Length: 267
Image (tube, rainbow, N blue to C red; front, side, top):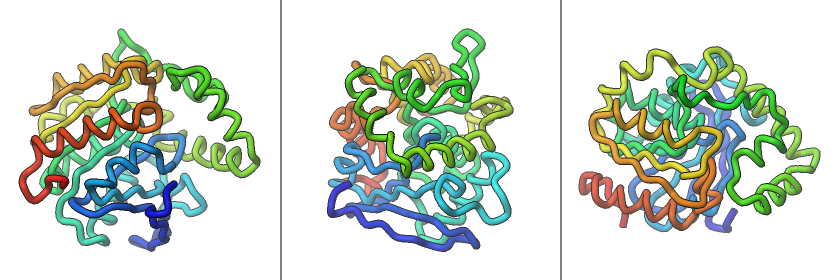
């Protein structure tokens, strides 16, 4: 995390929230994946041109969601409350993995709140011909190895997560992840029939070597979204902002400059 990143705690609709932000320009709301909120090198590069907002999902950190967290829709409505609390009429919405599924669900009902939608190795769909691995049957170390293209980078991440604090955070994230994604596993059977409602430009950005949510899912999203572009990043697994930060940020920013209305274009 760089010195320019601000960390603050907010209360939104009765829920305590930890929020990281950096940069100026059009607001970009980034929804993290199942493993928790981490400010990554790719976020620094986005923040050079946008106001990046990265909240920690309620239930993943120390604070629970007011009213309880039982399904992904609970987070959908929480983030609508967050947009209101921050007085953000429209944002660029970027979601990774579980956060990509969450972003897609928000876009289905609230596309008018978005300039663009970017789904990064997103969950939310199911393909019988490309079943997803059972992440609940894997240890955190096994998941990291599965998700990371470079074996050396995977081992470094595993070593960095060996502290008691990191292991406790992993356990909290795993419990919250199970609440919203266990049954049905990592998808919403109703989502495919609703994606036609997402009338905003959409970027489907995938690691070409993703073994957690394979690139076939990018194509499945593209077939159902009205205005979608697929980009695959070579030599990249499940986390482009961590594994290929420069290519990740360049691809997202080029998309925003090309497809966003003037008021929402990054500098």
